[in-house]
Image 1: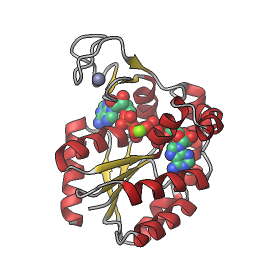
Image 2: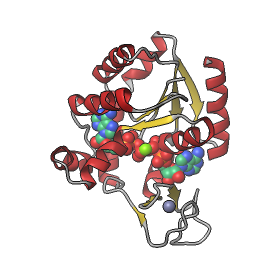
Image 3: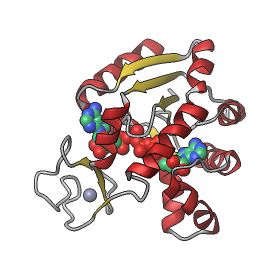
Length: 218
Ligand code: AP5
Ligand code: MG
Ligand code: ZN
């Protein structure tokens, strides 16, 4: 099953994708994670996108479509793909349809995660991740059992915060979402593929709602 998780910054796309990977053996394709990896490994492309990302603007369609195409042809995904943070523009959505078709795959459903703007600010400003294993945390909603130690991998002193998780960049990211990405909701609705889940519930509650949506689609 191939699915898109769509929602504003902080909606919980990455959090839920990680659960689906563990529970269903799916492969998470997060263009945000791929771009951050390119940035930290210092590739030419990574250097090019660093400033754009830090400001909260969108990277060009060409770059992210290239990243996704590469993964679709090389990744081994028996459990299917979760597209997290991609597509974000209509051009990306069209390109995804073509790329999936090329590898003999199709999209099964699109899950829109709705969260109000006030909650997003709270989620984004409290977020941090483990630099060793990538586990995501939150100061209030998902604090590690022992401050400074990762619950998942046990490493200490590896927690880091994203350069674009500040109020200024978040404003730009929200604007990009409403201007460029929200038209995709109508696009997938018209295709009969859209399902909505309330992203404001607990992490486990949202996971249950997504599981129900996937069942409906499968
Ligand atoms: P990207 O990395 O995709 O960032 P984003 O869309 O802004 O989304 P986030 O990762 O911030 O939020 P999320 O929904 O994953 O939330 P999370 O699960 O972490 O993109 C970053 C940048 O890369 C873009 O700005 C752009 O520059 C570029 N880019 C990426 N893709 C692109 C594309 N396709 N085209 C062009 N440019 C692109 O949750 C947030 C926090 O809330 C966490 O702390 C979590 O623990 C907590 N939380 C989650 N769920 C709950 C819950 N139910 N209750 C309470 N807390 C919760
Ligand atoms: Mg994310
Ligand atoms: Zn860890």
